[in-house]
Amino acid sequence: MKNNIFLAPLFKYLDLHSYYFYRLLMNDIYIYTGMMHTSSFLYNYKYYRIFLSQLNSKNTIIQFVGNNYKDLYKCIKLINIFKFREINFNLGCSSRRAKKCNFGVFLMNHCNIVIDCLNSIKEASNISNLIISLKHRTGLYNVSYNYLLDFIGNISLHTSCKKFIIHARNILKNNFSTYMNLNKPVLNYDIVYKLKKDLPYLNIIINGNIKNLFDIESHLLNVDGVMIGRGIYYNPLFLVAIKNYIINNNYINSYELDNFNQRLFFKNNKISKFIIFIFYKLYNYMIIQKNNCNNLFNIIKHIIYIFNNIKYAYIFKRRILNSINYFDNFNNYLDFIYFIFKGFI
Image 1: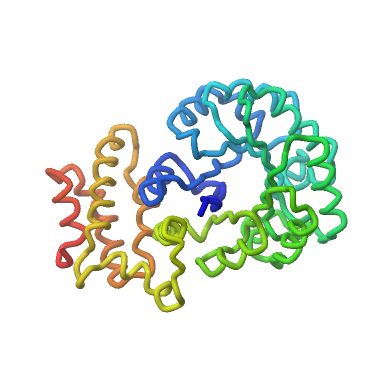
Image 2 (image 1 turned 90 degrees about the vertical axis):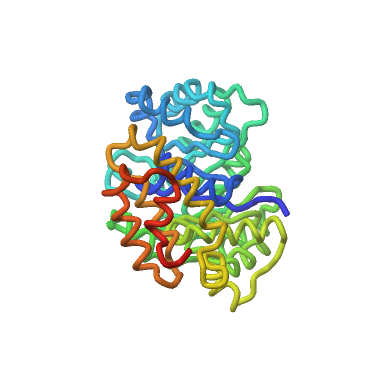
């Protein structure tokens, strides 16, 4: 079974540390970077260049946002050296700034601008088999299937974009809260399914509140792939379940799914070798990064969610947070692991 599961571009959640952590759990997961505004990218290119040079361009998809095709063209020229295989243009941002500056989801009312931007990506890239994708909502304030069908149809007809990642929500009118627009608008999976049925030649990926293997299984019956965001961030071991599902095509029933994290974490009431290995790798990573990282909490804040949905989580969370204060006293990874899992090894 091919890997058609993607990690969403979680704004303010994804950084180099989380990329390392997620790739440790599932090496070949496709991860979308957080959106980078074209003007910011050009102005701060020295910073972005360092960041991009540390990513694996093989399974990392870079994402841009903006409305100026000339700036986007310049951005693509700059990133050609990194050989990214896919470039994504974002039409999902619903912030007040996006409204004021006319980018993100608000460009869905300006199809011609979107076409110009997508064509500029194609023209500027030197990758022969480049994938150009578009991430967007089902609409703005009201969902109209005919409008959405026309929008995607025009894009696919006039550009090289044949991959559409659709967050199955619209946005709230006169509400620019990111949290509200990620949670309050009603999910409409059926409209995405219908798009795939009516446009079978396009690659349609669905996004929105996908939290378990049952969700993935049901969506893949109707679309080409799924994109998961917070479902992975707040439950990283979900990646291991996904990996098992992809490699072994081994569906997990309801009872096993509810207890997957617990069974993965413990073997005969002791911490499993798999978890010990993960924390061994994390310790070595933290050793390397501690001189470059002002605060080890920037690494720990991603790791801590690995304890979700297991017994004694509150103990392990407290210990790993305290480990920051004692980190320099650890002689090796055994001290680090013993500090966190004392009494469970």
